[in-house]
Image (tube, rainbow, N blue to C red; front, side, top):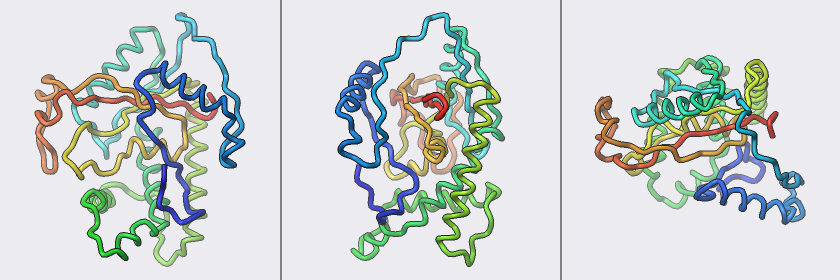
Length: 270
């Protein structure tokens, strides 16, 4: 994946996908990559060998944290329904579900840190400006959403007016480390094996109208291992609870589009 960053100004790692069509495919993919010992070719890679783990016995009960919708980022009906269906199936299999409060999940705080980190490097947008090209509508839409968010979310960061970028980076790194520590405490407090979360507020939207993805960004900021797993699709049932508002598309535009759920682990479990 190629990113237009100033060298040395990449603070949140990129992710790539889709990687495969099924779990057998992802097992083969990673086993093949790990077997080449990538650290020989890339100095940024940890030299960790592939581990062949035995499947968990059916009797093994997992403690799974459930990250519900954040009040600032409400879920669309299909995403809310699929998350409920996934948790119901896990509960029926005998697993313990721990429903995490929005104050614990720190989604707003982690997104705030991430967006400030993204904004430290103006290189990519400077290329567009120098070329005289118009800004992509998707970026303008994200900017509009961010300005609206500032009126809703109470900032937990200091006022950065007059603060140079180096001092700002130090403040953001310290805040990020603090939030990661709080997540470690959360994981240990509840004895979690994994967490289930929505990857986005919505499924399909009009072109250039997706906006930013708070449920993806908070995990990017934590730098936790995560997989986005297809589960269910939009159907007629979702139309019954859909309230069309400004900047939203009608539910018929989403029929049969897939809905995903996130499964994430902490660094403790890796």
